Length: 98
Image (cartoon, rainbow, N blue to C red; front, side, top):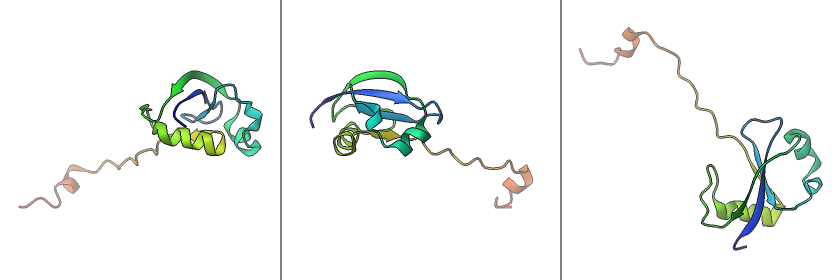
């Protein structure tokens, strides 16, 4: 697949979760269990997707492949960085040479 017009929808239930589908696709073709978790799709844009297209969290070629194979691409939010606890200054200097 060289290029494709796609529609991008954001989830009404899951923050930073997006669904890429071929423009005009009937969203009822998406698996029911995914639709239940995703919630009401909110269209955010249509775009021409090419393998070279730079996306924020995905590779254009991989998105095209997923749409061709499965009929959609689900983009989940990036993993959150684990926050380190604040340590007292004396603990931060524990391994400093004396």
